[in-house]
Length: 451
Image 1 (cartoon, rainbow, N blue to C red):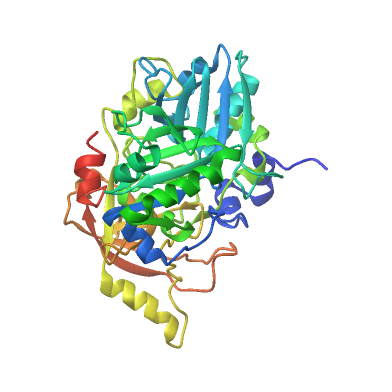
Image 2: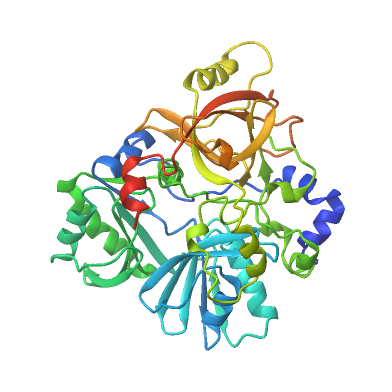
């Protein structure tokens, strides 16, 4: 039986929007333990002590190597590769011909001509398609996340250590002072007799290290970290808390990939519909392009470099002269949130369920942000911050409404309700929200993002 591709599925559903809004495909899953203690305490750990997060299972790895590996990535990425040598990593960003975002992931330059792209698979698919169809002298191997992998464990383990005591834990487990490593640079360490690569990084906007190596070494390395971390308040973090880490660092995890233009028909015919996610939220435009964002809209403008030719360069050059939206944190009004939650305990049709700590119920969440009756942006990822006692979302809004303190409205819930499995009968409501900086947490904004 042939596999249905995205182009065929769009024709069957009568358009890209109805296909994605009613898609049965799940929101992103973190296939690890939900909670080791409770998600509130686990969120607190990366602020007050040291959090250990297991990244081994929820991300896709695409390894690309060969003489043309860097040329392929440079042709597709908005990033500069001028000084991107082995031992470095970067947030790789790809756009379509019109300058709209396809996706992003962390790109590791491991050795000469050898790269590893790690993250959500939207950008992996695009890179793999161009490798297979573009005549590049390179090869790739792919390791899907543990939910989608056909069989066997991951190829690589990945652990994240972050928080104020992360460096102390690292020094104890390594048994020596840590080498000076610049942000997003890598070094090699030895833990429990195992060779470990360490990336200077922090998912929640706190001091941190991403550690990775062969899967067969993973348990031994993890046990050593846990033992070393006991005196420094190390807490293992489960899937629930981990899913909210991006809200503090202000990384928007899954904007809708801009792959529905006529120029990308060949890609849609190559891409299986199972690779697409679901579209959820109060945005109800029938035009799929109204859900697109540019790199500037979601805070990636600083990564765009025009020192090389790449897909979408001319369009982005024009967009850069007039950035359309800015990334902000929206702090939801606590009384309005309480009212929405309370509607489930009263007779009548309730508001859409607000799940905590992460409230996203589709892979590509797109909720309308209003100033009065005017649409001024899209809220794209919402959740609860136990450290702040607040519900927040990451959004992109028109510059005129991006000043901290501005009062806006998030429209929560769908009208009409879609057929997604995660959508129950509900009424659409409005929740007041106040614009705040992104990242919202001062340390993440002034220390982490300043690097």
